[in-house]
Structures are given as C-alpha cells and as structure tokens.
Image 1: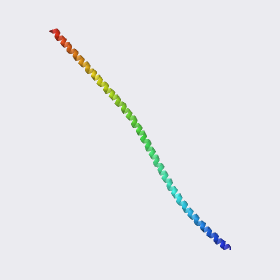
Image 2: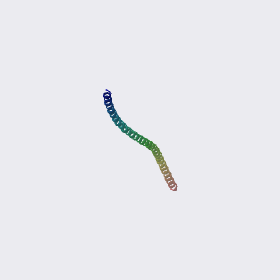
Image 3: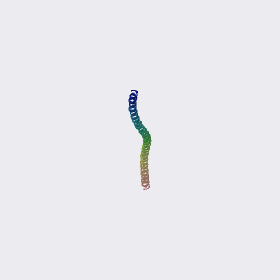
Image 4: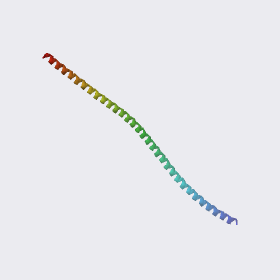
Length: 116
C-alpha cells in the first residue's frame, strides 16, 4: 500500500514538476518580452529626448531669426527715413539753387537796365 501511495505521489510530483517547468518556460518568455519592451521604451525615450532637443534648438534659432528680422526691419526703416530726409534736403537745395540763379538773373537784368 505504501508503494502505491509513493507511486501516486511520484506521479503527482512529476505532473507538478511538468507544470513548474511549463510555468518557468512561460516566465522566461515573459521576461524576454519585458526586456525587449523595456529596450524599445528606452529607445523611444532617447528619440523623444533628441526630438525635444531639436525642437528647442529650432525654437532658439527661430527666436534669433525673429530678433534679426526685427533689427533688419528697424535698419530698413531708418534707411528709408534717411533716404527720405536726403531727398527732401536735395529738393530743398535744388530750390535754393533755383532761387539763387533767379536772383542772379534778376540782378543781371537790373544791371543791364541800369547800364542802358
């Protein structure tokens, strides 16, 4: 009777041992999958960090470009204002020259009349 019990216990032990082996194999597969997923997640985190760094760099470049564009806009405005002022001064000088020539012509004309 004892031998029969031992055989029965041995059979149960083998069955449980087989279950343990199956569970152990499943666990190994699951751990392998988790390890792969962890590596994928780390890779994605790295790519995300690189993307953020690129975005920040582009944002700084954009800000620098905006500042440069504002400065160029101010230079252009000053240049246009300066050009406008120069044109006005040139017109003013041309008017003064015309007026001076007209006065000189009148003086000549007056001098000619006095000589006659």
